[in-house]
Amino acid sequence: MHWITHIRIVAALLIREMSTRFGSRPGGYIWALVDPAAHIALLTMLFQVIARVPSLGSSFPLFFATGYIGFQFYQASATYVSSALSANRALLNYPSVAPVDTLIARLVLQIATTAFVGVLVIGAISHGLKTPLTLNWAAILEAIFAAAFLALGGALANTVLFLKWPFYESIYGIITRPLMLLSGVFFLPDSIPHPYQDILLLNPVVHIVILFRKGFYPEYRGEALSLDYLYGFSGILLLLGTALFTASSRVLRNE
Image (tube, rainbow, N blue to C red):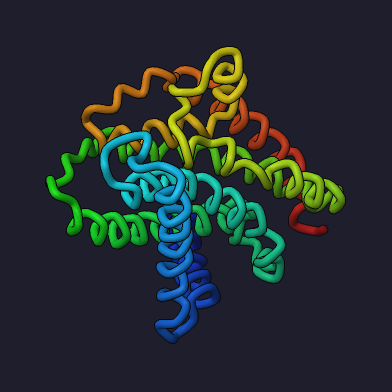
């Protein structure tokens, strides 16, 4: 029952991460909600000045909320999980705690946090809509799974690379800084002309955002979406990340 032990360890780490990240006061939880709400409100105000209607539907807040939260399911998870090992290094002195346990605990916490924030933010926006939302839960849940899948693969690789080559972390931060601009948060990738659309769709996060939006807009066909590419890219990244992480497990524990 080796896996049961790991489940218990991940559960304990999850509770520890919640306490460390949010503290015992409600302020930490409030900030987790205020941050995305502020981003969505700012985007809404800016784009309402530029355009009369959003690229999809009639609600600017809903359009940006579905884009931003769909993006955050990947981005926030990838960022938070990549630093799991360095933040919990002291716990690796316990033989029962495997390095990967720290990553899984953070991934579960971040996905749950983003989901909670998404329910509150989109739920609040839905009360101001003229027509009730028609949700496609299959698309929403699949987008969340795909985001977690992609984030874990990237985090496994980055954990090793960040520790071995600290300068890589700075380079990675610079390269990924414009990621939100290139992931379809502000626009519909389907509306981008060729060949620029083909280049844009090489970014797997674009497909996550498209899939997440399809869960809230029944009329959105999302023709640019390619699940084969999304899962193929994520699967290869996860295999490479797992191989790199496994090969470096002894170094990670003793680094």
